[in-house]
Length: 134
Image (cartoon, rainbow, N blue to C red):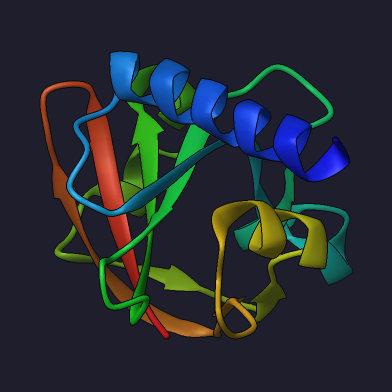
């Protein structure tokens, strides 16, 4: 029963996420993303936290081969971070480990980690897609 409910929740999140974000991956997981460095009380730039406990402001999806975690961020979420998205890449200043609960809900076959580094992102009709190669 619990497994069935989890699948229904993921399907609902996929449907809701597909309404607002272009979808190119096999799994889409709607979530709330807070930018910043976790070790610096969310100051600086990186991924401070990803949560499903609050209003959703982004979505995560895995490429079909699960080799790339893709974060779709609507323009409204970007307010205050425009300068971080002004070049060809963004810099994540600190590693972020995606929680086991989110990994499980996404059907990830291995741990999902956003490592410190520079990542390509692309603008689409509704915001930006950031590609985190696993």
